[in-house]
Amino acid sequence: MRGPPRRVRWLLRHLSGARVVKAFNPILARDLPSDARPQFASGRQALPITGDDAASKQVVTGLHGEFGFDVLDAGSLADSWRFERPSRPIASR
Image (cartoon, rainbow, N blue to C red; front, top):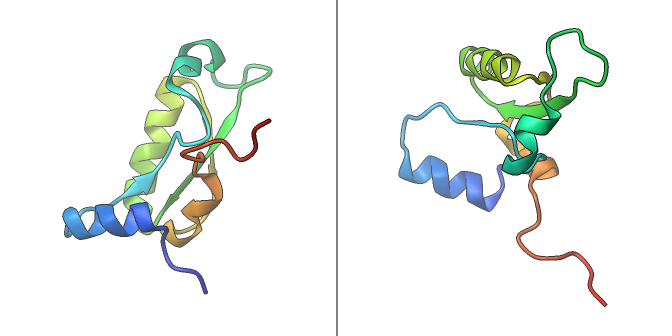
């Protein structure tokens, strides 16, 4: 089984005891205002979150709702690598 990505391990090491939830990774900050929708509105997006603490995930789910997004619980921090944005282009010409 795969462990948390290197970035998450670094964060957990430096914030010992913190309850970390990864959220908003698949969306750019500039797109948050334009992509937000009221609850039950057509076209409302669900964004994945990952974390190991259920209570913290509930807090983050509430924040998503306030920002105009639904949540897809994508599992533990070990699964968070699936939603990381690449730090450099995957392909170029």
